[in-house]
Length: 314
Image (cartoon, rainbow, N blue to C red; front, side):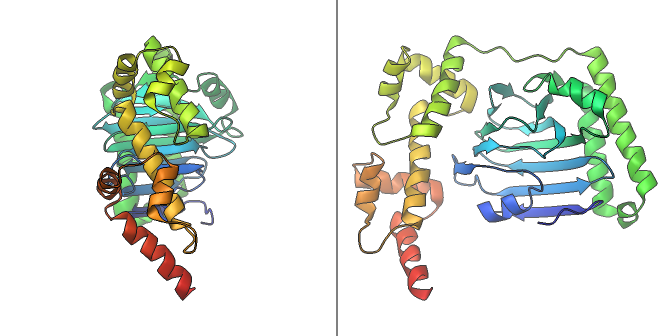
């Protein structure tokens, strides 16, 4: 989508294309479903004279290798978190304010409905502030009394309901100044920090990244526990604390996403559901079919049939 200054975009979505289309200037390497409605939600973006404001609500899933807007430092406020949320190595709860820059990609894992409002600040216009924020990438402070979240929501409501603000640059600049001033005031009263993690949680984060990069049918929680010299019970507790899911369900749903990708790309001559499922470690077809249908809302045979039909029509 072409970027335009002073642009307001609102998009509800129920698939990957609509979600990424409305995520202006944001990039993801991959998107995985952890819950049946993970690709349902809404995005809003406001392009002020200097700042970009992004508002997102989505359900449980993984955004892998998220890259924030280039040449900007971003400040995210968690406005709703019904389950667990983890961005990179940072656990998040409602009211947390997270700092991140455009240099490092991170993964966002949410186990339930999650909403955030994000201010992306250009380095060129705000050199001193963005340099300071960059030093605290991945760290958090707290949105005292939800004042920053309320200010951002108020701006969103103005763009939704008052067409005059779309062309009133002076008014927009005033809103920008208020946001920056309040953010600077918060930084004067709070010290950014990393939320504390247990030893098990630190290992769970390593395992999360390990299975993102090299997930195969041979990877099991037992094999990972052995590889990282930790008990399965420790992993159980750590995964539920960080991601809201047991490690087995986390790994299973990640593999199911790879199965779906394979079914969408399947060859009618050589690929079958059984072969593809076996390739990702699913050997009990009854269990596999139920897991797949619960997550994606359709039987795997329907996915494969649609793939074959689209190729014939094409």
